[in-house]
Length: 183
Image 1 (spheres, one colour):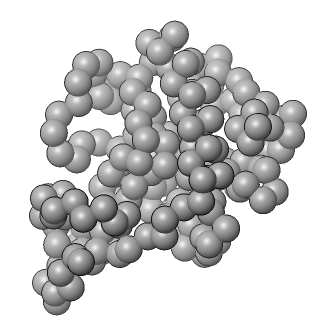
Image 2 (cartoon, rainbow, N blue to C red):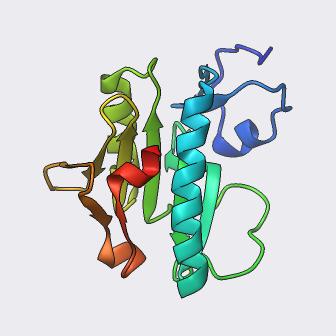
């Protein structure tokens, strides 16, 4: 069990905690347990990663990572675990990544909404990503089979079915019908 103390943890201290097999995030210095997702969640994350990774590798655009820690706030620190994240080579050069959390945020974060996710908490997380400098956050909802694209200072865009996810400022000519993420 993760120790519950009154002292707030930094991102670096959180990163050094022993791995006890529990999914957690650091939220304003406190370790918060997360639910273990259903297999469908993992399937959707894998499909997103497969589709985007193929394009990122073919076009040599950047790194695609799964469940990767992102520092979204400092003092007190918050470390969120993005389901699928994309860092361009402009932000993080090609090659093996350094040990520890990166000092930059990704351009793109995909979050897959689980049936247990409360929308208010998910939207707060989206806001943290955008305030930290993430360019776009895509929230995939497995019940409605939609993707909501969030960007700072813009209304969210909801895509479904054969509508294509296209983020030219981040992924260039990558285009995929939304239904592909849920197949």
